Length: 264
Ligand code: NAI
Ligand code: 15L
Image (tube, rainbow, N blue to C red; front, top):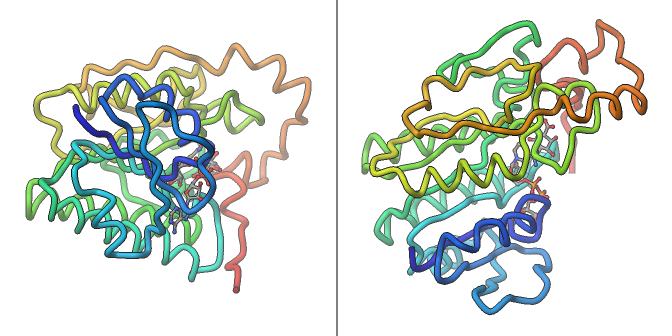
């Protein structure tokens, strides 16, 4: 494609993926409210607050694909979540509608289903059970993707990311870890299949411990390759196993289930 937009480019995933996804487009447009560093020769940097409707409209113009990482990524007061994840997602989908409906990868989260117990195996069409205002905002994003698909034909890959970091850092992440390379290969498939639609895909590697079944997204031809087991010794040496009745052991969303409602 000619131009790929990556929002949230200053964040943990954005700063890794700006390099890993560079081969997908002639130009990669990067946006964030935070500092994105210096641009490589194939990059355009655009400072943009996702809650600014006009700015997002201009940001999306001329883009053939979007990887939407931008927004609040943990539990925060509602005002912040509303700006980044509610207004921000509305602005993104309206801008996409105005500019030829480029295919979108929406970074959703396991916190949409965090209050399912860890002994439950879930399909993509399971009932949501958000564990936080943050999780609720990601349910909103998933619903926006679905509505814009049904009404206008906008295509989105809704990726319910588990824990996408360099490596797992606790016992829960043995089941939720999603390697950067598996995520990269998933995004490559999303932009190469002829017809995408609006599937929900569990963003998780091929971990021995697992709670999520991706068979409903098998049409993508994406098969994760990495496995958190290679980190097992390190995890067990560094972390005590949490009590069986703690949120870390009981709920899929782990400690997000214990978060209070934060006030400004
Ligand atoms: P992050 O917090 O490191 O990056 C998010 C970026 O969005 C930040 O650079 C921040 O400045 C930017 N941002 C926040 N509000 C904004 C606004 N109003 N306007 C413009 N930019 C704004 O998060 P991370 O880990 O890189 O995650 C990326 C996306 O993936 C997030 O949407 C997160 O919710 C989602 N996700 C990540 C997971 C992970 O394991 N890394 C797991 C599940 C979901
Ligand atoms: C998320 O949704 C967060 O954005 C990320 O920071 C992690 O907390 C991840 O979920 C997780 O559940 O490990």
